[in-house]
Amino acid sequence: MAAKIGFIDTYWKFFNQYYDPDILILRGGARSGKSYSIAEWVTYLFTDLENIEMMVIRKTLPSLRITAYALMLEMMDRFQVKYMHNRTYRFIKNKENGNIIHFQSINNPNDVEKIKSWEGNYVWIEEATDLQYSDFQQISLRMSRKNENIAMRQINGVAKEVKLRNQIYMSFNPIDAFHWIKTEVIDKAGYSFKEHQSSYTNNPYLDEGYIKKLHALENIDKNYYRVYTLGEWGILEGLIYSTDNFVIEPVEFWPKFDKPVCYSLDFGFNHPTVLMELFYNDKEFFIKERIYQEGLTTTDLLKMFKNLNIEIGCPIYADPSRTDIIKEISNNGYNIRATPRLKVIDGIDIVKSHKLHIDSNAVNTIDEIRGYKWRKDKNDKFIDEPVKFRDDAMDAIRYGITGFLSEGNIKAPNNPRPYISGGNIPSFSSSKNIPHL
Ligand SMILES: Nc1ncnc2c1ncn2[C@@H]1O[C@H](COP(=O)(O)OP(=O)(O)OP(=O)(O)O)[C@@H](O)[C@H]1O
Ligand SMILES: [Mg+2]
Image (cartoon, rainbow, N blue to C red):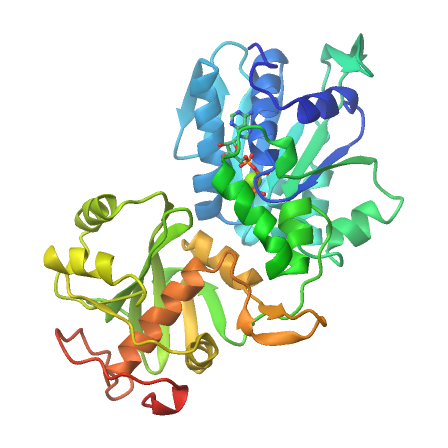
């Protein structure tokens, strides 16, 4: 594989130079090219080295599947690697040299057992901030496999033949300066590591629209600006939802539901368009993420509705500011309506008065809810408004819950009521008018 083709220079240099430390820490802002570059490097190792075993890890399997796993398969095709893919046991094997990459979540004791029984040479931990320190310790104990590879590396611009060593690569956004990656690995002297900081400025492949969004963060939230624009360590504070408000769990844990009570929709083009599916039982909402995708036109969206078998009669509560799109979707037979306009804070109050069960496959929603927070004003005081960034699933959930409740849909507990069609939408401007349960 001609590794350097398309490789972002700063990462290429970093991986070359630091072949020696046990851990390479790639901390950076949003879309700085971390994941893509590690995937390229791992592919390079997979094709160029002899007799190696690798593992790509992310906390949950659904999130692993749609990110690092998918990206690695994309790399295999891009670099025309001859490989065999075992979907059941989730590994790929290089047909030419026998090297192996496993894909592994680390979300329960079973997963940890699998890692404990493995011995390897290279590990990539994607979104490493999601892991516990104990998970990381287990992984670092497994890096004991023999590595006899000698390879050329560019060190300070000079090519040199070096004996390679096993390594862990970690990629993440530095959301919390009190995270174990900072306090236990970086700040303490116990590990051999090298850190690379990156931001969108390192990624020449980014589109202008996204760069504008990252710049705009400076005026929206200083902490997010530090984390997502600059790649500096941030502080986790002012979170809107806590684990008192929501639980993340597999749908198998839920009561049996025949049908959703409603869907909810937040429109975007530069932002993701989000469609949520809501179920209801005994004052609690059960939420699935059905669509979370940028760049969708209304025509695309309607096609997706069809493919996803979105129930024609079931109410869809949508962002009230986009009456044009609502009309178009309605003209296609869907039971869509604008959710009543409410102050965001009132909507959040209502959402918070219900426990949310979030499907563990709802990876984007989970990312959002964990970071969704109140804005600060110029004097560094929190105000009654959320930060408008990574909030699309949060908006959609709010539209769904407030819309559903506004129509007086709630009946006796333990008696989830299937959707009703039609119904007038009362207009109200404060949570006091919402039928409380
Ligand atoms: N070497 C490359 N060649 C082509 N495109 C690239 C390359 N590196 C990055 N990109 C583009 O930039 C986008 C963002 O890169 P990437 O996903 O690696 O960022 P990230 O730092 O992992 O972001 P996040 O912190 O949001 O996870 C990719 O989806 C891809 O489109
Ligand atoms: Mg990434």
